[in-house]
Length: 71
Image (cartoon, rainbow, N blue to C red; front, side, top):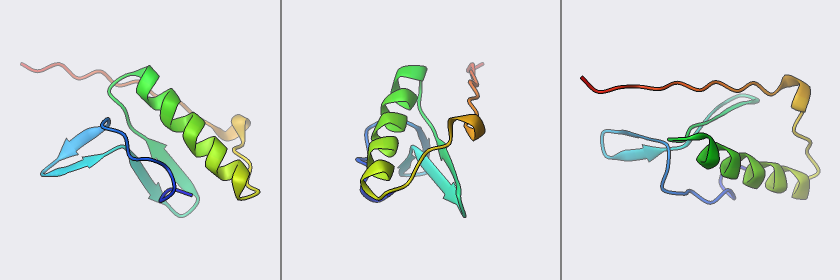
């Protein structure tokens, strides 16, 4: 499911890698620079899950917005 999700130019840069999806076991974190990027990723992930017969549980879905400021 993750591999079929288009990697869009969003997320965070770590070294030379641009990351917008982190996954471990059955947990997935979507990373974006703003809420719009994250929502686009979520919709794409949800569509891909549906194609595979999987369901994204809205009750277990959590959102966190973190703003960083450069000094």
